[in-house]
Length: 68
Image (cartoon, rainbow, N blue to C red; front, side):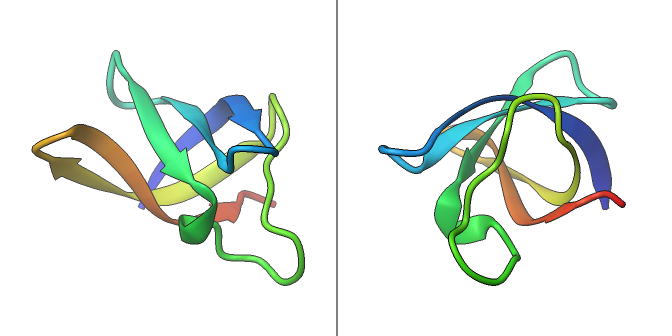
């Protein structure tokens, strides 16, 4: 699992970016990959853990959870 902080998340569109602790790139995150009950959203500055996927469209975060 990787760690990072939420850089931006758009509630209306359901996507945003995580700043990675390991990479010098922003990681795309979609609400369908957020692992929580209820309304799936993130707030700027929240610390998260996630699985990093290197896709043909760039890096994406999967199985995103709040880092407590």
